[in-house]
Length: 550
Image: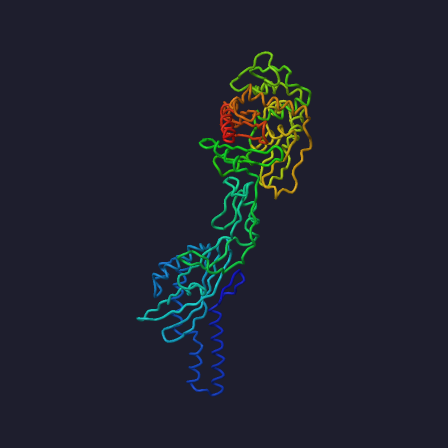
């Protein structure tokens, strides 16, 4: 008989023997009163069996076997049986397969079957990873030969429902697949996540988020089964019921785009990420991470640096600045004693325009333009790009933050994507997608799980969008995005070099974001501690786009 759960009542041999002695005392009293002879009295005592020395000795010998089994000492358990090799092998197999975190084995009252043969019942209770508590009843014959007691070992001794050639094991509930947009298995370790081999539960990524859907419901992830020792085939399920069929999780990942992104990161020594989005509907086409594991592509939090100038430029354009307006680009800009400078302290020649400053990523121009913006202007413009909202993507994401400026220095640093401005590669790919589409479309990874897409509380004016597109194209043709020159598809881009940490000189993340003019593809590239946006992130972006051409 088998039991499952924690409601089992365990045998209590001591209590049973106590009751036996009480019964014997009563019987003795009755026997004397009734005048029963000595023979009748001695027969009654013998029938109780509670103090039979053979039962006591046999039970003690079985207890040694059970104690060895309880601590997974297969060899020690085997030596106490009449078949040491078979017993050792099966005990080892059972304990290895089940891997219990706790094992308790209790004995019941033994019964003398014949001279030198005693049958003792016992109950095994285990706590199993992924399966919970499981217990079962069994029994063992203990025989006396050559004046020594031995456990008579059979396969059924360990579990009454097993026969020779079988063992116990744990079977993990079947999981439905996680699919790409074509219905094939998704090839992205950082997106898919991991499953705990021990418990059968999803540990990270989509495996964790959609654990119930993938496995068909709640309850234990594993069941105890009897399997054939040779083939490993399940013969019988001992716990749990057959779960409902799990449902696949279908994502928007385009395997061709995902592969192009993954190959672009091959050989990169820094932590890196590439995200690609369809601007028309927000579908995430690729999210590649190097190394795989942490999903920095969707969840990472970084200063976006000069890629944020797309937002700052939109705010300035809204205030009436035109791409052709003149704009100086000095080596330094001073704000209340704080010095801002351009990368490598470059300057632009006299007669440079707003477009030129954007294309070449002149920090000092944007810092000096802060007076055109209110303390909330960057925050408000960022809202039109969806930044800072709560996105329902179908997976965990970081959706960016652009706080209202608390002072002149805070506003100055924010114009160039520093200070308290934070974004993920997903957010910055979405910024590029918004420039391409003209309106924010919330990114989506698992459409079937999205309940309500986030709607941006503001929209970009059409004139602002047209100007942004022109300046992003100029970044490739005339500016810091020259790494993309010659690539088909009319790429538009913005580079970024984001300072972080407290070292002098500061360390920098390398960024590039952009979109293709001839198709629905927007993207971002991030290299953690990677140097310069144009010279370090740019070649990776170029490789990604070239992979899509071939």
